[in-house]
Length: 109
Image (cartoon, rainbow, N blue to C red; front, side):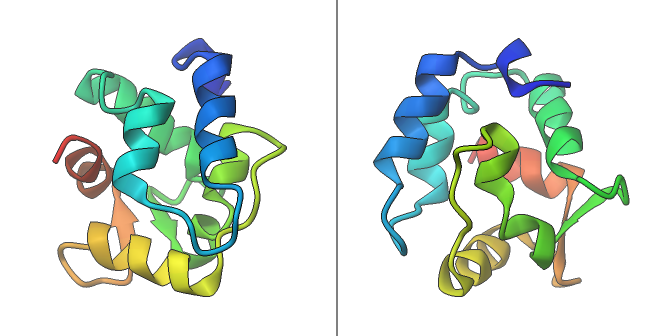
């Protein structure tokens, strides 16, 4: 599933441009700018599945590092600091990975 089926190309570009600099990523602002917050829970879960590259049912830290590339090949890699902060914000059960419900809750918090 391509992100552009759910999100507008212009919004994706705008969001990626806003967080182009290393250590500038803010998941709350990104979700808002890219249009994720406006999606239904079911559509957010479709986005999760697209970002879950290995189809494990979780977004692990290594996948999270490349999350912006999931929105566009032009997306940069998150820094280790950004990756750990993103994981800490989403991983409510402390298992070291983000489940689909954790992701949806994070997007809509």
